[in-house]
Image (cartoon, rainbow, N blue to C red; front, side, top):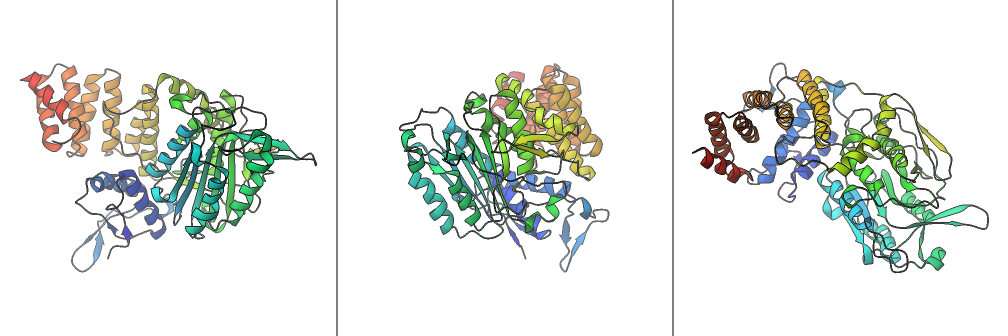
Length: 509
């Protein structure tokens, strides 16, 4: 009787599996999800699905042989269920060019493109087979146009599909005899003296966007130029009610004419792409509804990039748009913090603190003023917080805590995880994470207490036993540490840290 196929047998990425299930359930609103217990990735994906559905107010029914029954008190809150993006299929075109034949070479464009592609697949559930990538020598003018005219045409796009386009490379602006500016993206084989002949004018991309049989199309262009003639985009806090009925064609660019793309961002990325990646990590969810719209993305990215570089990003809706918004539905964060959790470099943390300018403007209730590609102003009103259930508020606070932890803002992360537990005292994930923040601050007694609380909530969380053992070791409580390491190994004998735990036990005798 299942009606939602996880496709876990074909997809090796747990986050992708979870996102696929949640997206389909967002459309179906109820049903039975098919998983296969022979796949380890399914076991990893399932908690992500369960935590998100519980946070969204879903209840789980049992089968008694003749009917489904829901436990008393488990009634969902239909007026507070998180919105769904509602897309049938997600396609992407991702292009990055470093090794230009006749233009100055770039350093980070290909790495930027690869990072965006990986984010689409692993975080937002795009099918790898529906993400078309071109790098360096592949990104000729003919090949770029062939992706749009052939690959997407062969895909037979449907009205409920979406298309995301990312280009990292050179852009150029040419003034026409009429005095109007016309922007171009520069393929790898373009001649600087023949831009009008062998580059791709932005008007071509406008025409392509308008011709695609998809609900929403979003262009992110990590290049600088002008001359698109965009119209104002129109998002508001209630747009999801009818967004599915409106076509959307939108574009966000890294800068205007005669501006150089800043390549010096952290991790080998441009400042623009680094900011986009941080935004898609959750920072651009300005109203806290679990969904990032293209307008929210621009409202965070544009002022943030402008504050740390000489670039002035521009945003707007392409001609033919009916006011629809491209949306990214954020996956639920389900990471239990441990010693293996990655954190950002000092360079990245310093830049992120500056980039949060855009979010701070929204938090203060101020409108964000951006540029359109004609140099005019585009005003985006401050996003209004949405109503939410206690479980949703707890999840958001936990997600915020994870961001803060990775930026080494431990006091703020402690406050966020504490807030999550106020909304939901039985939230084992937040309890473990709060404990680990105490551990990082060398407050080992408090850390041990919260790891024990985690295990009282959920005795199956192996990583909490490992964290507890480490905290006990720091407190000099060898017997208690030994017991916790042993429990960890019994629960997760093949875990990546099992060898470490066994070494600790040897030391303890």
